[in-house]
Image 1 (cartoon, rainbow, N blue to C red):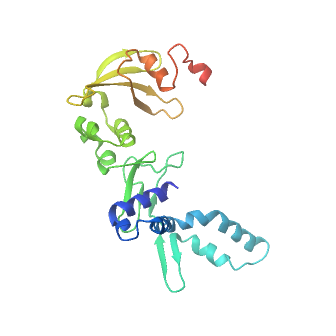
Image 2: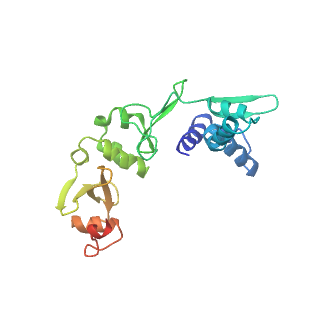
Image 3: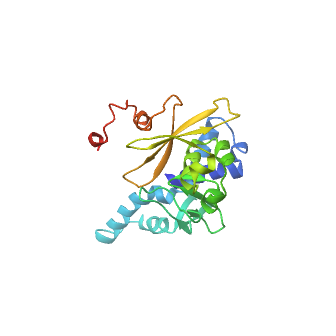
Length: 235
């Protein structure tokens, strides 16, 4: 599913196929079919693996030819007179949760050089992976995609110092910082720095500027009051 989404996005952004086909209901059907054909081998893998098992162990069946073919490609469209084949990627790296991820190269790359950079399933610009030390406060403030912005926070070597955040408070469960957003109308934003015990990843989560205590900020991210937040009970 993750691979399919990235191929879908790439087709949309780089080829502009939506402009070449009807934008009506039929166009959407065609578009979705084009995207799914690019990863059809992964979609059909489960059923065809069963066919191969039945062929080898019980009784030969004609689907063995499609099953073996399916193992050699990433996607395909098989017509009566025309076949489109998509080669497998030469690299596809994932994290422990099966999300596209790499900290030092393209996590998904095909033989023609096309691919994507991603951090824990979020596709990011090349610079976020290859040159995180060059990311600036302006890069972070100008990034409108909240998921990409969160990944930039993880990748920037000295996030707090880079964006000029000022310390407000430290509690049992995290630290609270204020960021000057001028000339943004909101003027200031508060971020609480927390550590994910299950993955050892750290996050800066935005909280309302009316919050001035770190533990209250952490509790707010769970929809609780500071008094209600009990990590021991949560665990």
